[in-house]
Length: 116
Length: 110
Image (cartoon, rainbow over all chains, first blue to last red; front, side):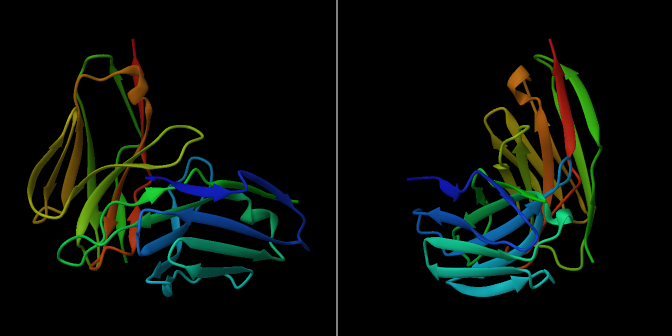
C-alpha cells in the first residue's frame, strides 16, 4: 500500500460545528503532516508529527487541533472555524532516510473544506 | 525567515524542453524538492537535491547550487499531461519543516 488516504473528500460546516478530518497511511512512515492550501496558492505547513509526537506547530489557531492516535493515523479536529478557513486540507507522510533526514512527502488527495 | 522565488507561468510546446528556476533565501537549509500538482489533485513528489549537482529521473532532472541558493527543474520531451503547477520547496535540517514556493504554472501547447 503506497498511498495516503483522507476522509471525507468534501466537508461543509457551520461556524459553530465540530468536525474532524482523518488521514491514514500504511507505508510505515513515522512523520505525518497537515497542510492548508488555498486556491492557486502553495501548501502551507500547519503541523508535523514525528513518531506520534507533535514536532512542529506553525502558530496555527487553537480552533485547529491535531491528534496522532497511532503511527498510521492522523486527525485534525475542527471547532468554531471561520469562513476564511475554507481551503483544501492536505495530509502527507514521509519516511526517514539513511542519515536521519526526511525527504519526499507523499500527499493524500485532501479534504475540501467549506465553512459557512 | 525563508522565501522562495519561481516564475509564475511558463508556456512551452509539446516535445520541447522547459526549465523552471527557483531561488531561495533560508535561515536553515537541508534540501530542495520539486512537486507537481494538477488542478484538483494533490502534490506529487518529483525530485530532491541535498547536494550540488544534477539529479535525473526519467524525463525530469533537477539541479542545485547551494553556493548560489539556486535550483531548477528541467522537463524534457514535454507532453500535454505535464501541464500542471510545479512547486519548489525548501526543507530545513531534519527535513520536517518544508516551505513551498508560490508555484509555476506550466502550460504545454500542441
